[in-house]
Length: 184
Image 1: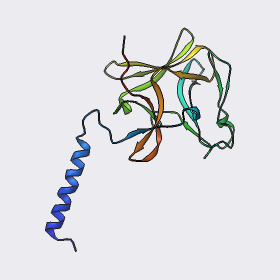
Image 2: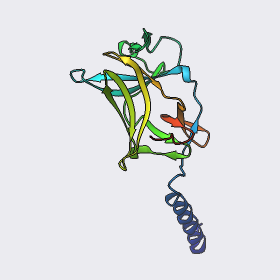
Image 3: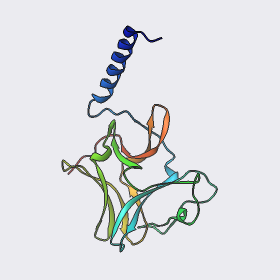
């Protein structure tokens, strides 16, 4: 039986626990970043609409039963998203929006604060991170002009990591860097 004093103690402990979560410093996060096998991931500029614009897709090869994607050529590398041709459940993961990926630099999880966008400059697909305060980070580029699905190769210092809660891996990936890149 819960007594009035036990109830008050439990309530105070719960409130104290919640206040420690809601009042984390800006650079702290409930989540951590865990290592992944980089060769199992690919960043892709995927055409949308009439093909003049692209969005970021990230494909992950989870099991080797069937390939999820195929690469061809270089500068840029064309990508055939094979996962669109079969039921890829349990074989591939596809991250196509900010529910599936976000930017993280060190301990700072930007979450919805930083938007990843693809622009085309001199015919090349460029992946940039943009924050509301005007911060712009070059994350990846195609390495040449091309159309269709094109692989984006990360700039030095960037990599894919998995969001974790404690030791539990979650279904969200980070475009990650240890430290903030120097801006020019």
